[in-house]
Image (tube, rainbow, N blue to C red):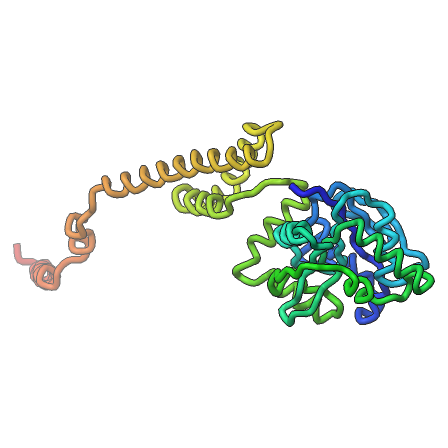
Length: 330
């Protein structure tokens, strides 16, 4: 794995958001800043340039001088605290940035002769705050700009990127998607709830919330939940998946993420087999029960209610008896 430090720029006035605390805005239950921090969890050192706040993992804080001095001033402040040969530079408003994009940037920045790599958006525009730079040329160019302009405050990023030999990485429409307006925030929140992405987003959010580093085969667990619900009872689905997780945790205590994932898969396999055996027994019992024919049931109504013919005969006998008693005939 490539060793790198990361600088996350989390300052700025967020004017198009009405001055809101943009890094702290939640998308999918996690702040924008925490979503970015999750994508670069492999960094040796993480520097966040901006106001202090609670974060999902430890970071080193600093501020640009003067505060509000712009991205180059913030980059310079963060760079002074790093020591790795390669430095990942990210803005704090990238809700869909993933580890795959980080790896691609670091690999491209390591190409011979290159001084860094940056993402391009779907329109082909460079994104210098979704980038990886070699530290030495980055320090050199920032120093030259500070000398030429008397400081870095207020300078545009293009003055820096124009002087570096950078590779371009097409990371697709999501990696470079940033949130500058409330419409962007709404679009991001809608996108993570789309059918094809919502489960992955939810599982990722839960793992980050619980501090779990584990690649889970979601399909295996969903199949287990289905089999438990169908073969046993619906409430068995969540209870079974919980027990599988508990068993896997015990079986892989002290092991790495790969061993833990294997333990989950093995526990899920055993529980699924058990649920299928339950279902098979239920099906066997249903097939073994004798069927009851409708004509085998005794007819109560036919005996309870006399026929019309019987009623007529009883009536005639009653009238005959009444006539004999009335005449006194022996």
